[in-house]
Length: 393
Ligand SMILES: [Ca+2]
Ligand SMILES: [Ca+2]
Image (tube, rainbow, N blue to C red):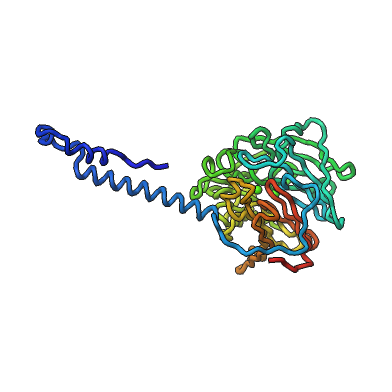
C-alpha cells in the first residue's frame, strides 16, 4: 500500500505559528517541494487505484455470465476433496490427483492426505479407486497437484508424473502404473532448484518433462504474496536427468501444460494472463513461441482430445472467490473447448458454466469417447455425456 507523504500537510498546519525571525528564514519546504510532494501523492493514489482496478480486471471479479449445464452432468461418487488434475490413457483409464492442500486454500478433509485415483471410463457409472502406492513413499505427506502420464515406446509401461507439495515444498514424484494390482510403484523423487512453485507437468519421456512454475515461490493462494496481477513471473522448466533449464518466462501465473498430438508443440495456460501460448518444441528441447491466444478467462489445466486434437480448458470464473473462499459465495466453474488451435481461425466454445451452486473451482476438463470429466481444486468432480447436448440454463 502506498502511503501519502505528510510533510506538506504539516507545513501548512504550522506555517501560521512562525515568529517574525522564523518567517524571514527561507521556508523549509519551498513551493517547488510542495508541488513535488503533491505530485507524489497524486501518483501514489493513481497507483492504488490502478492496482485495485488491475486486480478487479485480472481476477474477473464480479464477472457476469450465463449458466450452461448439460443435463447429463452428475457428480462422480466418492470425490469430495477435489480432483485438481486428470490424465486419461488411450483406452479410457483416467488418473486423478485428489485432496490438494494448497497453502491458504480450502480443504474439506484437512487431516487426510491426498491420493491418486483411478477411474475406468469404460464403465457406465464408474467409481474412483484409490491407487495404492508401494513402500518407500511417504503417503502421509502426499499432496498431489498437476499430473501427466507417459507411455513408453513399446506401449507396455505407463509412467505417472505427479507434482507434489509435501509440507509446502514443491517436487515431482515418479511412479509406474501396475495395471493388474491397480497400484503405483514408486520410482523416485525429483527435486531441483528451478522447481519453485510447480503447478502442472507434461511428460515427454520416461524421466523427462516440461513443468510450469506459476510464481517464484510456493505461497498462499491469495494475491498478496507471490501473485501480482500485472507482473508475469511464471515460467516453464524443461527437466531431464542430463539437463534442466528454463525454456519460457514472463507468464502471468503459469498453469496447465500439455503436448500437441504430434509432440511438436507445447500448449501452456496463463491463469491471470487469461491466455494460452503455443510453443514449438526444438530439437534441444528449448521452446520457440509461435502464438498466444487471448481467451479472457482464468485458465487452469489443459487436456487434449486425442481423437480431434481439440484443447479442453477448465477455468475459474472469479479469482477473488477462489483465493478467498467463502462457502456462502463459492467460486464457479467453466469449461471451454478450443478447436483448430494451430489454424488461422481457432474456434472457442463454452461447454459448461456454473456459478458454484453445483461444481466449485473447476481446474481440469478432459474428454474420452464423448464423455466429459471435470475436476476441481478442492470440491467435487462431474461426469457429463456429451452425446446428450441438452442444457439447463
Ligand atoms: Ca496435467
Ligand atoms: Ca493447475
